[in-house]
Length: 112
Length: 113
Image 1 (tube, rainbow over the protein chains, first blue to last red):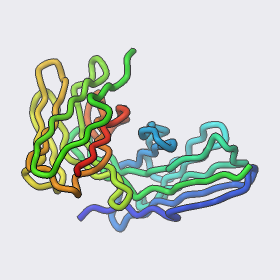
Image 2 (image 1 turned 90 degrees about the vertical axis):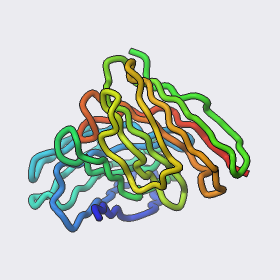
Image 3 (image 1 turned 45 degrees about the horizontal axis):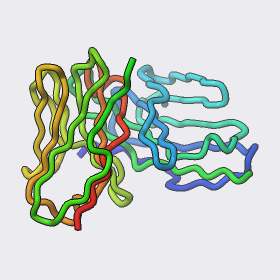
């Protein structure tokens, strides 16, 4: 069935280092949503990518959608302790009736 | 605008019992989705309701059911609870459906003993 693979599962970085998580699919993705879940919290929507090759930035966060729409990445520049949490990608399905399928998530730990 | 609310926040039940969880979406949102989150399986989609109709369903047994009321509030029910049903149950609302931004509630932590 439909699957979205996310790597790595865990990442420990020193504060100030960069961080990247990757989301891959064997099939073409309709769109990709990214969420962040802080420890003990609930997922919070970050962004949605729809177009092939799309790149969007939010301050230190850069989101990319692959040209073939089979992969996506989230890159954080100069991590801070506030970036700690689990980052999920999710395929939003087609239009109003698609299913949202989540990747397993990447848990980021930042050492001060 | 108030966020998504879920009640109760914590619940302890015994195997074999049933449980009902409630979710109130953001005002104006007609799509409500339910997810089960566990350390081993991650975030798994249970079902989505839109305007009182189940529009999508995940791969869960029939013990898991849900419904949506005319005011968009939703409930999910789990019958004959098993130990493996212990999880965080998250509700999310959206304007149009799962292809769009989801707003998650704080979740209900269910423990089955």
